[in-house]
Structure formats: C-alpha cells, structure tokens
Length: 468
Image 1 (cartoon, helix red, strand yellow):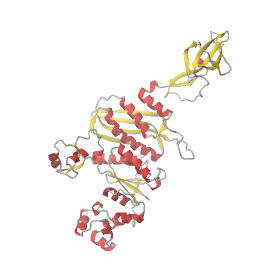
Image 2: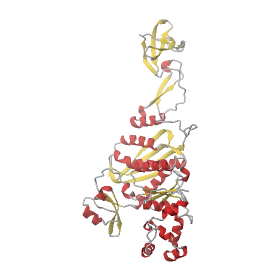
Image 3: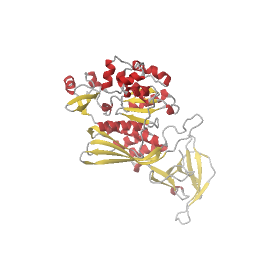
Image 4: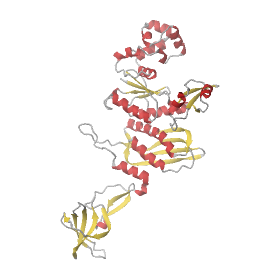
C-alpha cells in the first residue's frame, strides 16, 4: 500500500475567502479565560503574529487585527467536505483528527498517470480551493502522517527505504503525550533514529507501550488498520459564511468548495446529477431555494459550477446570506464516453447538452427552443418550435432546410439545380390550390437554396428556405 497524508495546518483561516490579502486576520481559540491565536493569514504573520500567541500580545503588535472565533463543528464540516472531494482520487479516504486526510493511492497511480501526475492534480485543485496543505507519502499511514507534519516532502514508496527516512525526523512530531515527551527530553533523544536504537524491552520500560507500538506502526512491524470514510446515499453539505453578504459574487468561493465535494461524492458512487438545489439561508427569513437542472446526467464539476454561477448571478437577494447549502435532488447512473485503443475519450470539448444548460441558465428556460417535425407534408406546416426542456427530441431530422422563410422570395440570380424535383401538393381539404415542384440548388457563392416553382407558373422560381 501507499498512503498520501494531507495535513492542513491553516484550515481554520483557509475556510475564509481571501477577499483582501492586505487585511491581517486570525482565528482565536478560547481556553477558559485565556484566548490564543490558532491560525493567522500571511499579512498577520508579516506583522509578527504567530500561532499559539496570546490574543492580547497579538493586539499589541497589530491593533487592527480582524479576528473570528474557532468553531470545532465548522472545522469538522470543512474536513468532511475535503474528504468527499478526495474520493475522486481513491475509494479509501480516512479523515484523521481535525486537520489531516489519509488517502490510499497505490491503486490510483495507473489511473491518474503515475505519482507525479496524481500529486500535480491534487495540488492544483487544493490551490483552487485556497487551502494550505503539507503532503507526506509513505507505505504506512502513520509514517505518511508523520512526514506531512514534519514537512518531509520526498516520497517514500517502499518499506526498505522507510526506516532510513524516519531516522532523521525529530521526535517532536510524534503524537505522544506530555509525559512521554518529558522522558525523551530528559534522555537526550532528539530523532526517531535514536529512538529506534533502543532495545524494545528497554523502550517499553522507559516510555511505555504506546511509544513502542507507535514506533512499530511507523515502520510497518505492527499493522495499523484504518476505517475508510463511509459515503452517504445522498449529498447534502453546508458552509457557514464568516461574514454575511448580499453579493451573489461573494458566494462563488464557498459554492466552489461545496461542488468540489459533490464531485467526489458522485465519483465514489459512479453517479451523475440531473438536479440539485442551492439553499441560501438568511437571518429571520425563509431560505431562498435555487433549483438547478441539467438536460443530461453529469458529474463534471466545472460544468456544475459554471451553470450554478450563471443562475446565482441572475438572482436578486432580498436579505444577506449567512449560510450556503447544496443538496442533491436527482441522481442517475452516469453514461461513460467511449474510448479508443489509446484510451482517449471521443467526447472532446463542450457537449450540446452542456451548451444548452448554459444558454438556459443565462437566458432562461423560456428563451431556448427546439425545432420538431410535424405530421404534414407541406413545408410551412411540417415543423414546429417548442421549449427545449418541455418536449423530448425523438423525431429524425427531415431532409428540409432548418431556415424556412416566413414568406417565399422571388429568385433573381443564376443557380445550379442539384436534385430532381419533389412534388408537394396541398390537401384536398384546403381551399387554396397549391402544387409545387421543389429543388435544392446552389449559387456561385456556394449558398444552398430550397426552391420551388408552381405547376401553373413554371417560369417563376421562389426561394422557400436556406440550408446552413
């Protein structure tokens, strides 16, 4: 096995949108009467603020420091959203503590084009989410977590190299209690290599069973079973906004985070979504619900986000939003695109369904029409236009031009006939007598016309339609 540990040291501050990088901001943890800095942004760090610093000392350095209180529930919710997002890379994802994810990636390397390609993709998506991450890679989950927290970036892929890589890591990064750390300091032990040099019996006697078990789990001598995250049958995730807002553009950042989690959820179930809802919560007002549907089942997160932003930008908010929720409403099996011998997908670029989704999100459902055939041989009555989302397109396209003129125009240029005549007559039930011979013809510029001449006036040609 090969484990990737993702350690998020700045998760409390990363959940806030970076609207103003020049504003010093910090998240504060209250421990009884004492309040200390848990995390701060780069602007605050440049002014001397550091994690673990007392709040009063931070205010002495930066009087205009903007603070927010730490919420364990919001931290766990953010980690759960990152867990769902990570499911697109592996079926075995394990959230640890409140700021670490473990992902088993050995089975995913071939699918994502190797380790470097996989890490590049994960890093790019986390940067888009504006999340600070420290990765660690090792054959055991404990060692991967240790490397991530110690800042050891070099991947360790085999057990043979693991013990050597562990030797120079400081024991300060081990998850031990204060009593064990005190014993290590008094013994002058600074690195894991020095700890490995102690005989097992002496190690247990001096530092307890927990230290020995941890050391053996690090190098693989003891098993370290983990329980993967169990995905629910439906998706519903919520983000509490740090600051209320009435600007729909300010909702794009948390919405992107939620839809990234939805993408991982869909990947884990091998499903697509046909419809989901965005719930905008307000103070003392009922939530505003925005339902977003798609013509075709999709799991494309970029397409989901594009359509959601289009719909959201057209909304007029009557009250500031304090909370954002995304809930799946209609899930369906995903139709996978065919691949050729070289594993390249035949569906490249934007599909017709995605284009229609975008047009309807921008212009409204009532603005997009579909041309359908009618059961009538007369060209002016052989087609009809209906709303694109109100009628399934099941009829085959006729051998007729899609551009039919409302009133035929007299032909006043030289053309070349391309087909034999097609006779079209009116029904016996109509009052008017119409008998026409239709031809497809082209002019010198390459334009194609649908022409006709009346049987009783063969000398006059009329343009009834144009081909694209």
